Image (cartoon, rainbow, N blue to C red; front, side, top):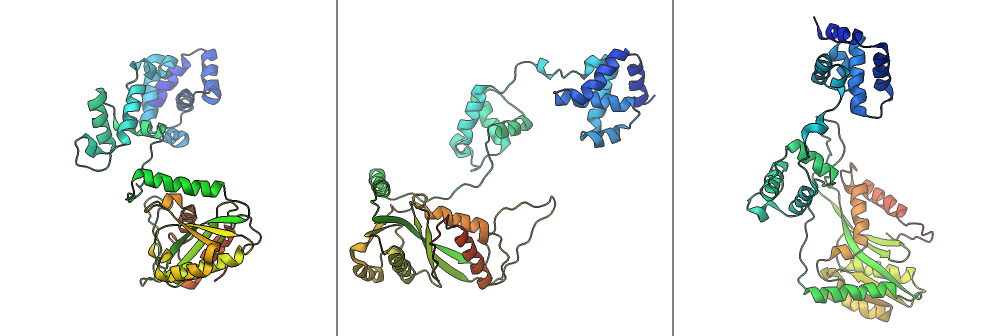
Length: 351
């Protein structure tokens, strides 16, 4: 006798009230697992094949047979999830705390040569600290529940300044932004490289397929120097074919025109050589007290707010782009930057 006939035989032995209750539970129960098991029995009683049931309910054929076997052995009581009777859960708050502490570091801190974590290695290290060993499936669910993500580390270069000196400079710049009078303006300045060869980054794609990004082969570059007003979010920029002092000077000259009504333009920028070359120092004498440069500590790009805008530019335009030539790419870049003027109706772009 097949599994369908056996289930139908047990079903006929149930009272009409129990049959109606199981049918009702298969449609209205708030417990998804219980509702699924009731549906499996209901469909078997309706003479549907296990393969078809698995396809309709989105489960495996083995689950259909397991539920049917428990129903044959125990009746409706066999449909109850008995996993809560397995005892106390292995994963405790102390285990979670240990996992979060471990994953924040590196395997090398625990005597392993491998520089990156795997789930198996996390299980081994946590087991050595807590005495609790869990499966990779449980570890996967635990990492997801604690919102531990598998991402790319951020490369950084340490600031050569003493920590106190770096902190003083950053505090000075913070006070400058907070206490800047209305007849003065503070802008963040930086340059960004635009490459015709696209930056390659992650994207959604179908399983078993990999998208292709055509590249022109021979790379071309353009450069943009931008200034972001810290108070209004206004963006001004100039373009150039080389990343030289002339590009920075052109930007400052443009800012002098844009902010002609301001007494002082405070420019916060990094220590790149084009910001302090002999040509720039000569231009600074022409600018006079109208332009004051404030240099960030070395290797502190996160404190230059325009860096975030450049990252957004790469995410939205240059990464995986398919522009056939530099003219099309720069046209797309300009459109994006114009959309980022953040409500500034007097926005001006100078090429």
